[in-house]
View 1 (tube, rainbow, N blue to C red):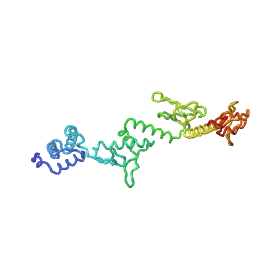
View 2 (cartoon, rainbow, N blue to C red):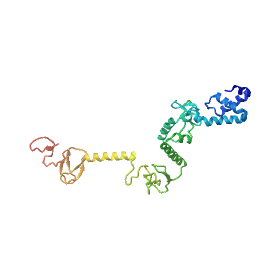
View 3 (cartoon, rainbow, N blue to C red):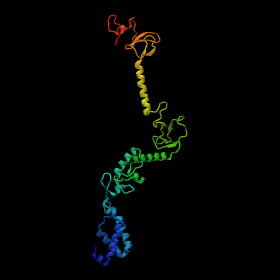
View 4 (cartoon, helix red, strand yellow):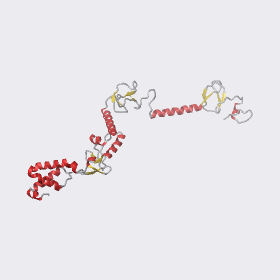
Length: 295
């Protein structure tokens, strides 16, 4: 450094200029001696104000070639994973709480999976922070798929809050329109977003349209299961006359059954006609005449 130049210059002015430079560029990682020398060289020609402008511009122009990436950026700890990141890899909520993009992305993916679009700050403390991340932060941190999901859910929420009478939306994309046709007349919704969707859905259960078939909701499934059980029990009790095929059910009594139609006697267990005059011998394993129940 040229000490003679320092002696010839007003030291108060030089130090004031140094302060001005580093106020404008607080993160400038330049050699203070070199900056001081640059000021001393420029001061006699340009004067105090223009010298500050010249030095600042020089530092800005030479930063990309003289310093490694991020060397001028301070490291900041993410308040979620507590890992240090360069400042340009950190995003902040409106209150200034810093988080890395990876933590924000994972957090938002979880929130969107729960159908939540009010993505508030993750900062945890006694009082917490309920401020929402700005849309610009979300766009910077989210993948394309997550951003599309966020925009779709946000649009759905806005439409629901608008409470537009008759408004319905496609369950498979973000298309929506007003349906003024009664549900009983048109039970399906035809998406007009033909380029990306164009599917037809049920207006009741919001699944693929299923003409002629009831909606597959839990109540219907329980009802169908109960009917299946009742039908199986009925089939188990039902008997057909071995002579005229008339159907009837034995509600109580012994296993000797009499057809209500033709009076034929049959066995409830083996379902065969009992031809012996002594009907009850059929239910006793004796021989001869070997007419006992085969079961």
